[in-house]
Length: 499
Image (cartoon, rainbow, N blue to C red; front, side, top):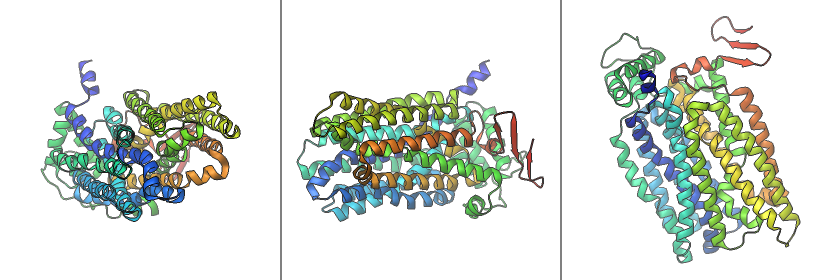
């Protein structure tokens, strides 16, 4: 009994490592949140139009593609820790450029530089957290980066509110400049944390990997068991006790793209489909429209002054942070699948309600419909709440844990690349979409995407709760369908067997 309790206990050192790594996500979340309110003042100060606003909002995600697609190979080469430090340094440079930008062109350059840091951060923070944590606490520790994003968004909204009181040409610059402070701290702070034991092992540094595992495990037995699993996963004899071994296969990510995209095994193909699907639907269901254009939505609903718009936006950040934090305590208990389906189901209802309320406001022309205004705000918050209890954290937990060890960093980078492209598409087209099909119609469209998301998750995402990272290929070699049909995919010479 006592042993079971010990196994379920979160190791304090691994928790501290994950918290420090998640600071990069706080910086990214702040960048996203502060942009939402800052755009009100940038548009007025720099005299830009809605198209330029959309470009500014979304270009960070296209630039994040560079960071995301580079992060996997970079982290395989220099390690997870140094990659986090590199990402924070890039963020620092981007924030300085935006804070001191004398023109729209320089502002865009700073946004692009920060975008590269975003790509690195979104890949490496969840991967590091997943690799440093034990199986039964991986869900809560791997979701810390998503909590960091939500907390950063909230801090960005609060920054909007307080710095909006300053002079027009100073306030929004200070909003961006504030991101430099945590960037400097993280760039050096992460170097005090240990390297991922799994990365050390694939470099052949077994002694170093064992040393880290002893720190991030609750007992010597747990550390030894985790090391044995890692050895087997990368092809090292389980009885090997050497301090350093030379692996026959490459350890710097070479050849991984072929195994992922050109000649994937059936389990790897399914894993890749699952990762791409969950990252696509996280943003295709409209969260970026709410997070980034919240003030626009509330203004359409009938909120008038800038102060009230920014306060309503803070409500979005509070709801997101509270519910995403609460959800972390259920991920390892309830499981990924159950939370995910519940989350998306609630999002569908909330999006339909938000679309209906905003349509009523739109059709009332200049007459203020008070109940529709309050319904718009309420359903907007409910949507954010349901998004935060499942789809938000599980996207990053799930995609960081399902890839085989050798493919994990670069596989995660593909998921993040899809995530950023979808995010950018929503960011850069939302205002044009509103003009084309009305704001209510836009949210009805997002509700339709949420329905497709629920169907995809139901059929293609198996439960991963309680399975070690080294067991994930087994999870993705069988799918149980209803009516007692088992479909087992065999990767050997037997081909595909259906029983």
